[in-house]
Amino acid sequence: MQKVKEARLNAASGTSSGRRFRSQYQLYLMLVPALVFVSVFFYLPLSGWVMAFTDYQLGENMFTAPWVGLKHFQRFFGGVDNAWYTVENTLVINLLSLFLGLVIACFFAILLNEVRSRACKKFVQTVSFFPYFVSWVIAYMLLNSFLAVKSGVLNQLMIQLGFIDTGINFLGDPKYSWQVVIFANIWKSLGYNSVIFLAALAGIDAEQYEAADIDGATRFQKIHYITLPGLAPTLVMLLIISSGGIFNSSFEQMYLFSNTTNWSRMEVLDLYIYRYGLGNLQFSYATAVGIIRTFAGILMFSIVNYTAKKINGQSLV
Image 1 (spheres, rainbow, N blue to C red):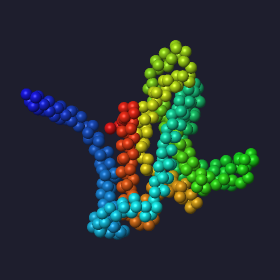
Image 2: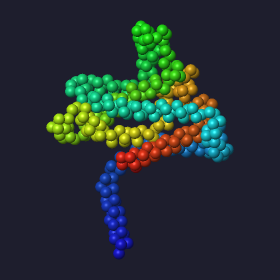
Image 3: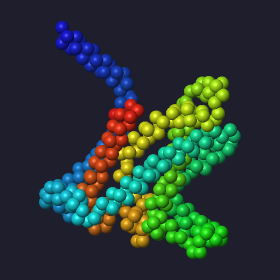
Image 4: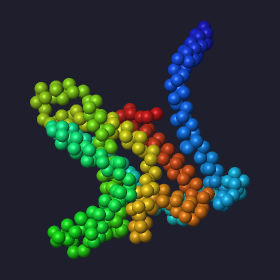
């Protein structure tokens, strides 16, 4: 009897799905261009991963190159090329940029939301959002005008105030490399992230603030007991979404900010893959490192997603 009921439910479900598809087939057709785009530009190139298991040379057919198995993966994990400093650089720069960027953007959105003047709020929001649309080439030129050793505004100001005698090489000294890049990431993403938090603030029930006003709560108490708990789910979801890209850096940014003096602190996995792939023409080894980076990102996403689900019940999957 139970099997008969299940068969009927399955048949009804199948009929319902078919009816829904026929009534909404126009919507499914609209997905076709996106599916074709993703397949051609994201999934089809994955066939090139075969190079990671072969000894591919430029000009050869990558599917007929000599098979070497896990040789290139063993080379990376074996530390033959001393590549682990690139993993350290990648993790430190991206983790701090992500965490500090979201936290600062969250508090910036809270402060911006407390501004009573609509004109002032719009002006500050526009100014903070502008760097997000600026390319890294322009962003580097702006930072260079402030941080240059001789002509930089910051160095000139500190020299005139008597804090230093000679300019500090912020863009070349390895001691300041991580700080400069992390600051640039936070500055560039502040406006975009704050807009997300402002949207989340708009979704908080206004009756909670009205009840807090009746109870005599101060502005800081309302932020502590209403605003921050209301923004916590958004913060967690952004952390989960962004965690998968921890091992991916902006190649354009890192290429511009790196030089011969700070290379040891600035070379991330993207630059490492570029150096061995296009620089040394070791395509098989560079492909293997790229695969390692991809699966490391998937693992990081899974860990953060699982941790968030265990702590507060939020997760993407």
